[in-house]
Amino acid sequence: MANARAGIQRLRDRTDSLILLDNNRLLDLVPNLPVEQAFAVMDHLIGEVVKGITESITVPSLINLDFSDVRTILQSGGTSTVFYGENEDHDPGRLVRDTLGNPLLEVDYHGANGALIHISAGPGLPLRTAHEVVEGLTAAMRPDANVIFGVRVDRKYSGILRVLVIMTGVRSPLVEAVRESVSIADVVSDGSTPRTVESDFPRVKGRR
View 1 (tube, one colour):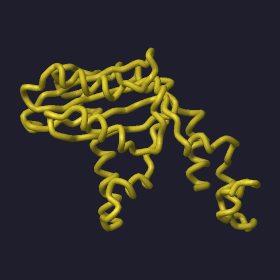
View 2: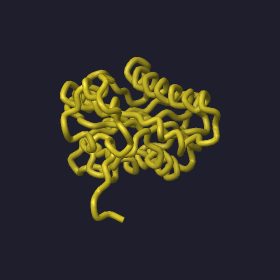
View 3: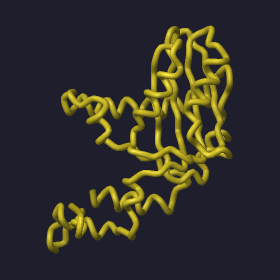
């Protein structure tokens, strides 16, 4: 935990957007998989995110995204995370619920200030369905939030809807816990008293 805090602290001041993924979310997503397979799921999701963003820029789509769209959303985005979902194409409401219910970081996305959304679907995607997905994903964001979305239609997605969202300006307990400056020296063993659970998470007096 100390290593993570030090890394977050150093990155926060040197990045436009800090996209965090929490391996602990695997306990909710795939709690019964063997360890090596569970971590492979996170690797796969990260790969899908990178691939999805890259293809949204480089592969012609029905509604295209380009590099300037990505830069617009991520520039000064602050704490950000990724939402990823896939479901049947006739139930956009369930897709929205599943996607927002399984972020790759514990976050409060209410009041988020930006979102980059990419929808993949098979031929015949109704305009109303795409609209319902975007509206559902952004309903809790700020009224003046910057939202950019793209849509790609491909036969390999026949019968399904897949959505990838990078949402910026979210709140995360993990990030907000990093209040004081933490240096790498704090987490390197130098013969000092070893850290304990109590030192990293001190008890709060008066709490039962």
